[in-house]
Image (cartoon, rainbow over all chains, first blue to last red; front, side):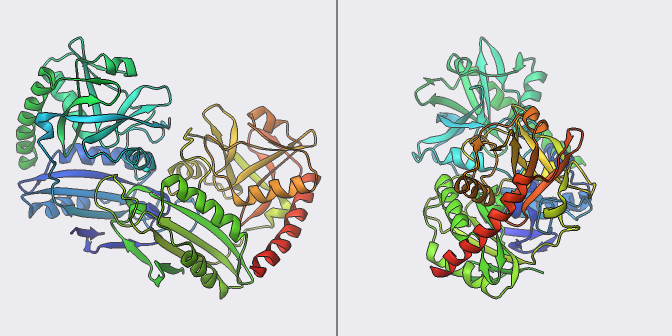
Length: 282
Length: 282
C-alpha cells in the first residue's frame, strides 16, 4: 500500500490531463527515509531544482514542497519517499505555459528488502543490449521519460541478476538501469561522465565527495567495455541500495568485492551519520 | 472540457502508481473524428499494435479497446480522440510483469480551430536547436516519452510560427514537433527515414500511399539541411492538420505552396472519403 499526497492533499490519483502522464513532462526523486528523516535531502532537492531549471518549471513552491516532504517522512522509521513534480494539467499539445502551477505528487512505500545481503555479498549483473541515446538536453537530470530503463530491465528475467549495465551509442558503459557505476583500475576510482546520457545520482555525488575528501584518486571520464573488463573492482550505487559490489558481469568478467569498495562503504556510512546531523540542525 | 474513459468507466483521473505517469511507460494515438467516425482507425490501431509489440504490452484487449473508441466517438460530429495505453499500475521499480493488464485511457476534446486557414495559406516554421536523440528501440512508435518535443516547443513563443522542425544528431531534418515533414526536390517527393528517431505518422503513411498510387516519384531517405533549403516545396502533416504547406523556415528559406502539395492535399481528401467508406463497411 502507498500513502500519497497530491498537491498537499491525501489522494492516490491524478487528473488524466496531467502532463506527467501525457508526455512524461516531469521529474522525480527517490528519498530513503531513516528514523523519520529524509536522507540526503539537500542533495535531492538540489538535483530536483537543476531539473526544474532544465525543463523550465519556474512556478515551484519550494518551501511548501520541502515541508510536505519532511512532514510526510516524519512518521516513518524507515521507508521510501518518491516525489514527482509535473508541469501540471495542460491542454492538448506540447505547448507549455511557463506559468502553470507545477503538480506535487508524494508517495510513501516500505523500504525494500533485498534477498541475501547484496551490500556484503555483491551482485551479479549483465550488459544490456539497449544503448542509451545521446541527449545532452536531458542528461543528468531525473526526468519522467524512462522507457529506456523499462526496456533495458525487460531484457532479463533471472532473479539472480540484480542489475543491468547500459552502454551509450559509442559502446562506453555509462550506468545501471537503476544505479550509477564505479570502477577501480590501477588503484584509481573511475565513474563515467554523464553529459550525454545517464542520471547524475545522489549517491554517486556522495561517493565522489567522500572519495575526494579521503584523498582517493578519482577520474570522471568515459569507461570503455575494456576498461570495465580490466577493472579490479566494480560497484553500483543509488540512494536506496547504497553501494553494491558487482562480482560478475555475465560474459564479461568476475570481480572481487575489493578493498576500495569496502572502504567507500565505510566512508559513506560515516558521511551518512554526519549528513543526518547536518540536516537535523537546519 | 474533456470527456474521459479509464478502463471503460467514466473517470478523469488515473492512479498515481500508473506506469504511464511513473515512467512514460505507454503509447498514444490521436484520432480525428468526423461525422462520428474515427478517421484512419485501421492505421492508428495498427501503429498502436506495433508500439505494443515494441514495448511488450501483451495483455491488450483489442476488441474492447476498439469498441470503446468507436462508441466514444460516435456521438460527435467532429472532435479529437486521444487514446493512451499504459502498462498499468505497478510496484516501485522498472521491472514490468508482462501479465499486468494494460490501462486504457480515452479522452475526447473539441477539434482544434486554427487561426487563418493554414492548409491554404501555409505556415511559418523554425529550425529548433534541440536535436532528436538516436534511439532505434523507440523510433517510429508514438510512446509517452515526449520531453524532446516539449523542450523543442518551448524554444519559441511567437504565435505566427506554427511548427518547429527538428534535426537528428547528424544534422538531418527529421520531422516537426507534432508533424512529419515532406519536401519536393527536382519533382521528387522526399520524406525522412525514421529508423533512428521520429514518429511514423499516420498521415505520413497515407501520403506515401496516395503518392505511390498516383505514380508520384517518392524517396524515403535522409534530408539534409541543404536538401531542405533547396526544396521547391515543403509541407508538414499529421492526422489533425492534414497537410500544411510550409512557406517559410526562419533563417533558412521561403517556399511557395506549390503544385505537388496541392495535388497531394486533393489526393488525401479523395482517399479520406474512400477510407471512411471502407471503415463504415467493416
